[in-house]
Image 1: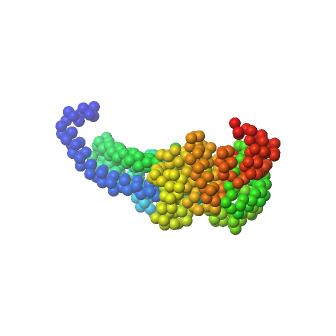
Image 2: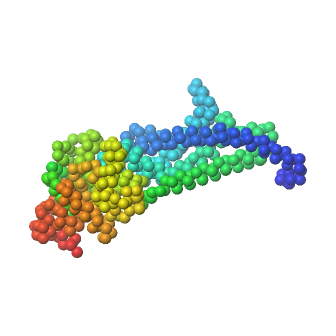
Image 3: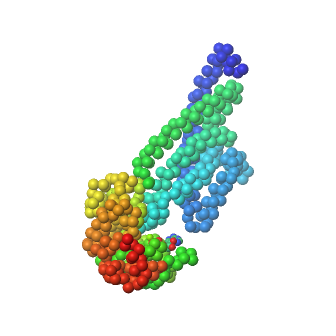
Length: 233
Length: 245
Ligand SMILES: Nc1ncnc2c1ncn2[C@@H]1O[C@H](COP(=O)(O)OP(=O)(O)O)[C@@H](O)[C@H]1O
Ligand SMILES: [Mg+2]
């Protein structure tokens, strides 16, 4: 068996350890310079899109509602991988060339925007009507009410599901390898191409993803505790 | 000071207010009683346009809204600023402390400076007996305390009229008195008030006039003594016999 043959053969084992060591730095660089920035930038743009989309969905303007529905439906109804292919390999047919990294940012932002808009919409709708009315009763306009009363409370409700989205996004960035972004998974693929150590490299990449997500979930808990200093009811 | 003429409100097919007419003079305290579903809440909410009346005219001082025509949000906001509303379920902002709740209107809506507002807000909370609870969040306060913050929050906007929708009916009995006391003090200071309540004690001690609303019409109105001890209408009699256990 594979494992047996490794441990029986000190030379082979040593080679593996040395590959694992020498690949760690490139993988970490891929994570630090591509995977994380891709996830963070896309998430920030995505959340802005998501708030706007959620507000459009709950507005009374039919056109806004329609546009938002169409956007969410199109993004949720098609695979992210296909969206990335259209952005990167498809658009050049129209003369639109986008570099790998920005193409990935656009793809992931649109995706986060659509999925998170549903989370944010649900969070806004979960705030009791009395809160809107209390704001109005002290003279607030719609936008003051949103900014000061509704969104701060909706934020608290949506932190857990949004954190899940972010952690999901960090892992999804591996799809960007297919459009030539040299993020961590693509780095792993490149090293595999020269060393043929498939299991080792992909396991190493998996472990790094895991560590990152583990750290993120700790940060998530911190934020939740902070936002829980008041309790809704 | 407040004038209501021919006020109608309809939800889909359900006609809730059927042509109310009412004049309220400055400094008067009006108590509104009536069976559940008779339209008391709807009437109060029409007075500050949380509900848009189907038709009718409402004036407060020299601002008049005629609901036969569409009205801009701006005019509604300006009109609403003349009234303060106290809700049955308090509706405090849970993510703000008592002090922040009271400061929110003047700071965000009137754009007043925080330092000036803070002093006034502290004074208001002192006045409702919560000077030692400034930094408490709503969940740390009892119902009676929350409702008193609600009153202070409404007062912070310097309204000309205070509207109360069953302010004590969500409270445990032992907490009712502290809220009623604040309301009585307010009445004695000359605040114009429209109060929906079934607290007979409050009505007898503080009201200038009691209105009995049933099925969207004012069935009877008069001095509290007259309404409570000598109602003219059969429906009023029947209703009072039900609530005076
Ligand atoms: N937003 C609404 N939509 C539909 N019907 C409503 C709404 N608000 C109140 N109603 C109806 O209007 C009637 C009067 O309600 P309300 O003014 O709350 O009465 P009260 O405060 O006297 O108990 C009730 O039949 C109630 O169901
Ligand atoms: Mg009511």
